View 1: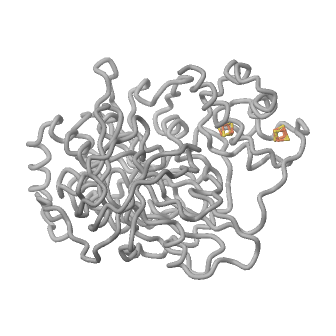
View 2 (view 1 turned 45 degrees about the vertical axis):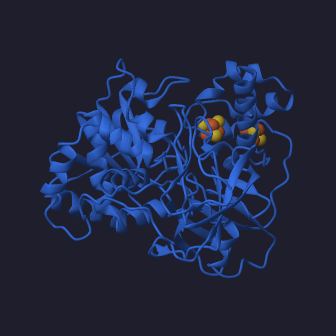
View 3 (view 1 turned 135 degrees about the vertical axis):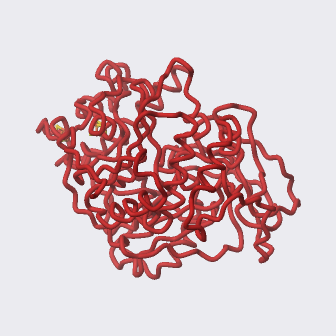
Length: 453
Ligand code: SF4
Ligand code: SF4
């Protein structure tokens, strides 16, 4: 008997052209680059400070930057070599100038010593793994996750050790593993579920040990039938069938957004300005779960990331790239770009950010590099058609935001609950006037945050 349950979506959503042209392309390991550029802020929270100096030699996996702030995650060298210089880089995703360190490779790829506790690739008996997890206390698990620099890899980059340690007054009864990957083009999570399913499930078991929820769901959209079958088999093989529930969801955008996913799975609505923990839920992405496994069981810090390189490029791929590898190095591995006028988006077509240069590196939040043909479309006047309101999964008024941000009326947007926007991009997608509504929303949110100190 199968263990998969189906659930209907709790919102209307968009049925988008999937364009997941790399879905059947196995993850390729990208050769170690000659140098990496590692920004010192790669998560939500405080930036890190250098703990190495110019001229120092470092090994892959060595911690090179850290912070005393609780909401932060340390950063590690992703290659071995020499710290050649420190520079300023503009992070196009959050429009901020930040410090970065450049490491020049010694060509050796030497690693710090890693104390592996279990070999999940070779073993078919997982009782030893469970014993290790069950006998490790929550504090130690959270410390290992923090020291490895694990953050939410679905794009949010919230430090995982903070997320898995909610305040005592927040009782968490539900844990959701998010394998939806609802944005068109992106297939990195899909391939992780197919190729690292054991690590993903073991990571979920470790996460569950820290928050002891009553219900544990693994949510996957039904356009990834192979991943559903793969994890179903592994759940049984690894002996998790009594604790994990595998949920197949209709492929609808933005199913993978935390708030819409929670509503669909549990029927609970996260309050305006609130967090999933306010309704007793914690959501983690499948790539984060893999990383939790690697940090706790393999002693391995977060130094690489699976990135889908796709769109108008000769040979689209899923690449496992060291953090700090520049975007042009990844696109160079995938052949020529299309002959039309091209621009590059970091992320997917709905929530991604267009960038100008290609020398920005892969960071912990990068999951896709999308080469788009054509020009960025010209914005026209709003025609009050109401399509953006109709499609918004959070039942918001996107046209009000665009109009008022242009006039500098940020407080009006607040009165219309702009904090509840999940920046899914559905409104901009349906807008016939090509209004970059999400850009206005981001501007408004960051202005409000700055004004509030
Ligand atoms: S207003 Fe926000 S939540 Fe609503 S459709 Fe637009 S981006 Fe998505
Ligand atoms: S979809 Fe675009 S044009 Fe239509 S009401 Fe919304 S902002 Fe205006």
